[in-house]
Image (tube, rainbow, N blue to C red):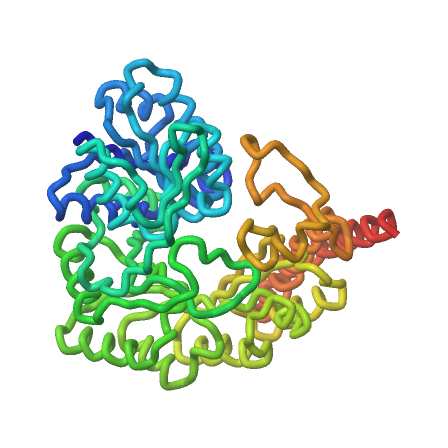
Amino acid sequence: MNILLTHGYFLDEDPKEKLIMKPYVPLGILYISAFLEKNGYDNTVFDSTFQSFDALTATMLQNKPDIVAIYTNLMTKINVLKIIDLVKSQQALANTKIVLGGPEVKNHAANFLMYGADIIVFGEGEMTMLEITKAIETKQPFNDISGIAFTDAQGMMITTPERALNKELDELPVPNRKKINLQLYLDAWKDNHGYSSINLSSMRGCPYTCKWCSRAVYGQSYRRRKPSLVVDEIETLQKQYSFDNIWFVDDVFTVSHKWLQEFVEEVERRGVKFQYECISRADRLNEEVIKLLKRSGCFRVWIGAESGSQKIIDAMDRRVDVVQTREMIRLVKAHGIEAGTFIMLGYPGETEEDIVETMNHLKTSLPDQFTITITYPIKGTPLYAEVEKDFLTNFPWESSTDRDIDFKRVYPRKYYEHAVVWVVNEVNAKKHLTEGHYKNALRCKLRAIKHKWQMNKQKTAAA
């Protein structure tokens, strides 16, 4: 069997990411690659990140794969459709089966099938992809494969029973990083930031209920590898590559304090030295946990805040206290770990008073880093269902993504776009004042005033 795995993300097509330049390898398809290889199926990974669509086209036409499996998310959807067009337009690829997986496909399966995909994979892909490969190889029907959708001979969409989540993550091989040129990623980091970073996963799923978060692949669950296996992977990576930091991609790294304790003890027992950053929640942090993070090499914790308004936090079903979030940001910094946080503006029902609370939340806690995005609804989430009746946009599915959706908010979207710049500059002005950088503080304050004026203008126009 000739199997090609790809993900359709081309860095050169993403001007924002080219400015940020912090790319990470596609762990999902590398897990599938390793699992197929472990079960006797060699495969090719076309890592599109540093490649072009023309290069992918040339590879496809040269290899003529029996299967092309494509990871699909919001960022890659449009290119995935281009890849489907490519396969369907080339006689040389007439026998190639197109398999799609990833977070974008579950709630758009019918559209992807109508567009030309042959099989849609729901949830985790390792075992499903192996069974699909065997079925295609032996020309068997797909009906007995759990967790997929396909179109039958009559053109009807068939959806098979859901596949159970993989409870034995310890049995999975580590991502097949040898299939790609990982050095390109490390060099991109080093050349642009002076240090390099590599990504690693220790768990799958998230047990929390935030309304805006998609759980299309791993579900609302918590499953984790043994700490010893995670440290094994770190030691192997250190032998194979030269890098400075590790980014744990886990949704809530500190969700289990017992696991964290065992992880720290394993790291110390082996004498492994490394730096890492991770994501947590305020309610899964305390002084003891922060000390454990520090002991094991954590240099930065991203603490999900999303808003400084308790009203909005409750509307999101975040189930955290904004005061506790501020306290944990300050406590993390007090222990010599950088604190980062995520903020979202434009959530349903958010008023200017809520935005001011968020701004004050950031000014009070002063995280070392923070990011702000404007809320958008992802299909399949409770937020999407909540605002679907209030959509203001209706773009063709094949040329848009959920990121393009706007919905009726308290103020127009343009208001929140200016609010993002307002908050960023108000907070940065406070930071510069605290550090004694008065000219920088003045520049930020003037930008903040300009965008606050634009906010007022948008609000007046909408009244």
